[in-house]
Amino acid sequence: MRRTFKIFRQVLSIWIFAICILVICPNLAIAAPDKLAAVDFTKQTAIEVKVSLSNNANELKFFPDRFTFESGKRYKLLLSNTSGMKHYFTSKDFADAIWTQNVVAGNVEVKGNIRELELRPNTTAAWTFIPIKSGTYELHCAIAGHTEAGMRGLITIQPSVVD
Ligand SMILES: [Cu+2]
Image 1: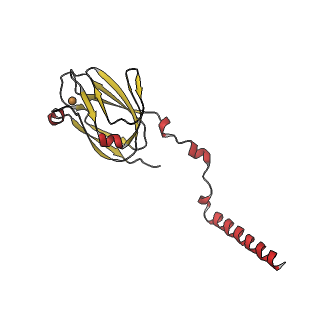
Image 2: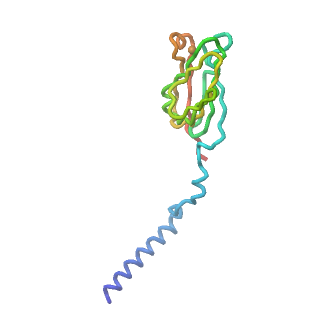
Image 3: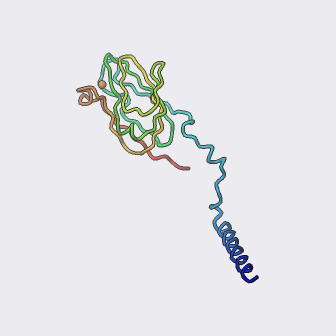
């Protein structure tokens, strides 16, 4: 009888302790699952950003040559090459700092990791991605002599702003 009372007392004290914790720290209560389910980064409307690799005058530059993205947002980078020669959009460290959803070029959609894009004359491509890791990354065209001639730029990924 004494033993039963002892067990009862122990169970009761655990319950009182748990109730006190919940009263003191209501944040410990499990978050509403509907709030968590509302976040899907891959379904955000893509922010469109245009970049031209060289131009009709065959200038060896990116237009523009500075980009700023925010971590966690979804972007669609619209690349075009209207020049008479092929060019590269090469930024391997940037490619490692993003999650690529796809690259669409012509009727082909490529999924998976992309390291660099080669655009032949008069072609376009759309690169959809979500930046993950903040930092500043150099961009260049990998064709011999093009970087040195000025075909380079900088891509910045800023940390996401939490509300
Ligand atoms: Cu080039």
